[in-house]
Length: 289
Image 1: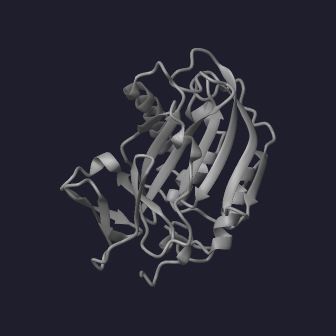
Image 2: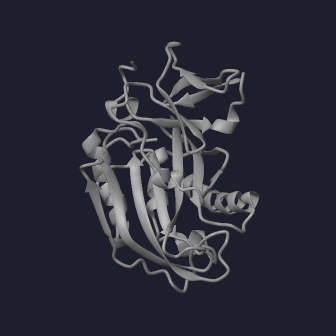
């Protein structure tokens, strides 16, 4: 057990790396929550991980990634039922290092208002910057944050898009450092593509982000799907690394929200309820990074 980490992060599941990043017989040392974790794979292909004290950690492989916990997880790894659908394609992107709290990354992922300006002519256009009213709630039965009825005009909503569309979004924060997006699929408008951002909080203000996609796309090459997602995220990284403070403030007085920021406000309230401290900015009057 790690006594000086709050249970909200110590006893949760965290992504370590992609399954493909550790071949059979190999091992890697990674930073997780300011600790060194060794992830390995035996000759038979089974993954394992050891914490800073050398003790074995709980490990799960899912969605093309290896997850571990530094404590005793109170619940199973979050479920993504779409991963079992046989016509979906799984695509994973390599880890991207970002000099910002992982909580900042989740909040940025939830933000639709930046689409026309950061992702111009892809996820939005400056002529149509409106964020229509949407609903957001903490679902107490599963302890997750959900934003529903989200809509936004996008000229190129996915790698397979050939024309613009009004995309419908559902956002799901499954854990403090895990956020997923369900969005209108150009190939099958009756179903959603699923895009997840899995964040390894290496240090309070340094994160490794892994994107995972479960898409309905029979035409686009894997490399093009990954390249499209990487293009989007690398545009975000520029903004994230210039935000100050690098840690996420939870005080409602720290930053000025708008109506479009409702998901962020509920996310911050949820984190505060959990007593989260890792990656959180000190309250006013304390030293901040």
